[in-house]
Image 1 (cartoon, rainbow, N blue to C red):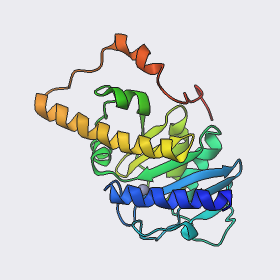
Image 2 (cartoon, helix red, strand yellow):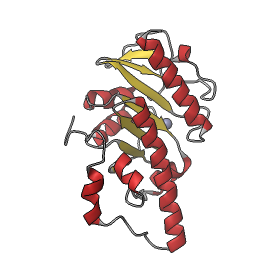
Image 3 (cartoon, protein in one colour):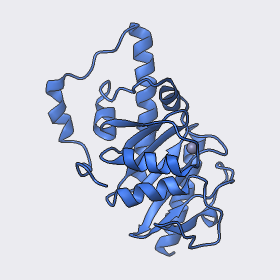
Length: 218
Ligand SMILES: [Zn+2]
């Protein structure tokens, strides 16, 4: 099996897993992986996310040329713009998980300081101001917001996570939704902001964070 086919199988399996976990809808969400420096493999548009298979995965150049016969997702340029801005990124997962998306719509921050896992895996979370889905403006805003963050909330749209590989990007999407649910439950229980991990304990957790992004990449 070629490396391309192996990546395509992993992308399709990851997309089905995202759907099965209830983290996106049948039509929503897209995943991409940097295959070579200038070649991005990605999920197509208009495909049932529960049934997507390796043969559905297509390839685009970093600057938007189709390198295989497929219909790119309408968010292709958002992925490509982020890869151009962040040479350190190897994979992107974009989906519409309900709780994280609700926080993005409500303009409420998701706390990454309620659970050690959230702080270590997510780092800081950045908000992308509302832009129409599939638009060049959304692509530009997401790429600008990605600067030194691996987790983005897209206002009135959903979430996007990045990683050095697909598993890391997927893990961040899942942990982001868990952090949103944890924030919601703590705030409901306490009727007030929950107790954060003490600031003095953070350096110890920072030492456990993988792949610190460059301070101001792109
Ligand atoms: Zn979307």
